[in-house]
Structure formats: C-alpha cells, structure tokens
Image (cartoon, rainbow, N blue to C red; front, side, top):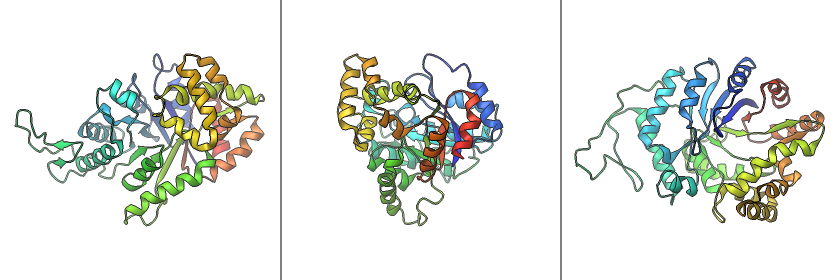
Length: 342
C-alpha cells in the first residue's frame, strides 16, 4: 500500500504546520499530496504553492468540485498544473452535494451522474487536443447555443504534457462508484471500511464491465482513500480525535434524506446510530452528537489505539482494494504510521 498526505481543506485559515508535514512526507518518500475544497479554500492554489517545494510526490485534488468550474476551466487547471509539476498532477473530481452546489455555487444539483459523465468527456477532449472542442450534451453544450451567437469551437493553445493525465472520481454510492470504474482512472472513496470491501468490489466490477477495453479490471486502477490513524494507549481518547469529524459528516454535511456520507455508514449497519447523530447535530446539540458516535464505528473507518492493535488491524486494510492510504496529523507521526501501513 502506498502512502499519501491529505491536507484537506482549510478551516478558518491555512494550517500552520503544513510546510513541516509536506517536507517530512517528501523525505519519507510518500507517493502523493492532496488538497480539497468545500466553500472556503480552493484546491488548486494551495496545491501549486505547496507543491512547488516538492520534487517527487504526485499532486492531487481530492476533490475539485464540478460546480466550481466549467469542464474546460478544470481541464485548463489540470494541464497547467501538469506542466508546472513536470507531469505529477492528478485530477480528482467530485459532484459534492446539493447544499453546496445549490447554496454556494447557485447551480442545480439534479442528475449528478449524467453531469459527471459529460464533464469528464469534455476534460478528456481538451487534454487530447485533437481539434476544436465541441460538445452537445444534456448538461453542457460547446459552443453555447445562445447568447451573442458568436461562440466558436476552440482548441487549447497549450499542448498538454500528457494526454493520459489521470482523472479520478470521488464517489460513495454504488452507481457513482461504478461510474468511476467505467470512465475514470481511479476512485476516491470517503470513509472507506474494510467491511465494505466486497460491496465496493462489486460496484467497481459493474463499471469495468461497461468498458470492454478494461479487461484487467482493478489492475492499473487506483483506489485512494483517507485512512485516519491515531496511536495511543487509551482507545477512547484516540477515538475522540476522530469523532468530531464523523459527527460533522454524518450529521451536518447534508440534509435529512440527502446526505451521502450518512448513507455510507448506514450501509455499514449503523442506521439507528446515524439517525441519532443527525438529529442531535441538526438540532444544534453538536457535543452530544459527537459523543453519540460509537467506538465500533470509529474503528471501522480508522486505526485507533495502542501500537500493537493498530499494527494488527492495519493488515486487514492491506488486504482491501485500496492502493494508497492518505494520512494526516502531525509530522512526527508520519514515519511510524508509514511503517505500519507500507
């Protein structure tokens, strides 16, 4: 299993120790560094700024939100970053959710799978640079069929460094996961658990079957997921570091009935627990929601506790379809965590 560094998106401002973490990750030979965006920091500017201090790690977005940029703007950012990094860029894309898409970007959310399929097709056409880009889809049309009536097909002035620049899709539901296998070069799960490995293998298999050129299936297909690791003698205290994030995503990152993170944990068998966490969180009782996250749920998606326990449980993760584990936390822990996971 490869190891990557997950810097995520910012809270109130840039993380103070990020340069130390990136330097240590580079020193230890980590495979990649990843940034994200929600409705604060964007994912490209930090990746370019911080990536300039690296020379070996791949630079990925996990994720670049579809609604934040048109497909051609995403392709422009990708080919620009790939040139600046010497061919180290990975374009990780995701649809986000209706609260962000409609509330922050002011765009309609329906039919995210269809939108994703068209979006990736346009990005690939830009990167191929075979001719002026045209597209006549349900979600996107190039040139725009209205307005001033002066739109014309255009071709990127920049020659892409790689036509096969890797594109990865963030997905949580089975249909989205299958789409990643069908049209992308990798899948970015969120809150992956070894107990869901068979479920996701089946979903990916459906996607691979739609593309007859992918006879190898998982061979050459990347699955890159965050894997929280907290080592300490007190398991509950270790779990307490993870609980606030879990409560946020289960309870607060989406409306009732339309929270894809909630659905991930419900499929694991925690439907009743998720309902309670969500009720508490949406009612403003965040501390109670955090306390309601059971230890077993934390242990399903993270490695927490004494070194021996974490080392033993890591072996289970190594048998899953994950190809790269993304870690976070302070830099002084990286070497020990990398030894456990690699």
